[in-house]
Amino acid sequence: MGPGSEGQNERDVRAALEDWAHATREGRQDDVLKNHLSEATIYDVLAPLKYEGTAAYRARWDEWQPETTGEGLFDFEEIHVTADEGVAFAYGVIRCGGALPEGRSFEDCVRATFCLRKEGSRWRIAHQHISMPRG
Image (cartoon, rainbow, N blue to C red; front, side):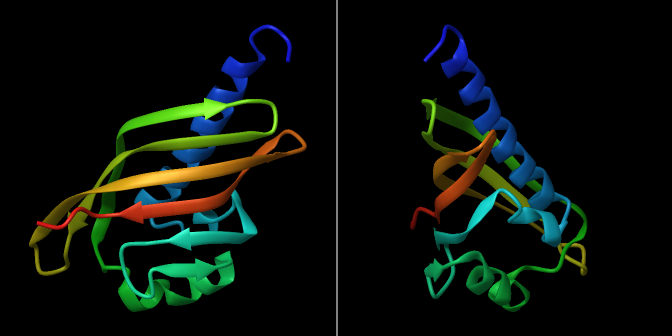
């Protein structure tokens, strides 16, 4: 590992995660999973909780994705990244929400963990875990 390469890997991982967050916030469904491996395992806050592969995850979006007006809220409040030359992990808190068509708004905080693998020069999400505290 050369000097400064770990810092560049961390920056590249952050950029991939921010790209995911922007696509989610803007409702660009075709771009949300572009940095995921097709065989990624995804745990989410809504049933069935575990998705084997991005196709299974994408197939369920219309069932539970809330219809909002305008751009939604989907921002990392904090994110911590550790990366070497081939693998990385990241974790943090995401504030999400939006305005429903009838005018009522909602907002939640969720925990997020990501495991990534570098393929060529591109960081890809191999595992994503989103959870919401109860209570």
